[in-house]
Amino acid sequence: MSWKVVDSANAQIERRTEPWCTEAMKADWTERILPRYERSQGALMPILHDVQHAYRHVPYQAMLEIASFLGITPAEVLDTVSFYEEYTTEPVGACVIGICQSIACEVCGHQALLDHCRDSLGIEPHETTEDGLFTLLALECLGSCGTAPVALFNETLHENLTIETIDDLIAKVRQGGGDSEH
Image (tube, rainbow, N blue to C red; front, side):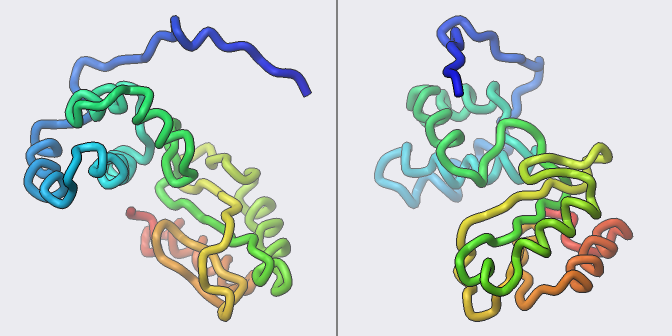
């Protein structure tokens, strides 16, 4: 393994003319999120969730806009985005499938489910299908060990999964009737 040196100090951020953080979003954050926290930095994660849900990722320009809105450094925003797996800097599929790989799910056959999703969708974990419909993730414990194996389809937990139930869930999303909306 080798280390790659990146000249991040001189990195150029791709920008678009319209802001990612709209005036309506900022008004909502000011009314709904900021009052819950003593310091503005406390609102960072809920705001990142809103942006992730709105755009299926957190663009770098949006990180700059969020930093400015909260009065914190862009580095603090990027540190948070890069630390937590739930945030991505590249768009994810309309349906994010997260297969739990905890010990309980491992004992109950999570690997067969993950392998089946790989084969069925033609992608590896942390990849998105070419049509942008699915992103596959291998996640750590989802906290439902008594009903293993489990997976998230977007934010909906599905328990006691089998290959057949995974196929049914994928088919529902493809038909537009499943967990394809955040």
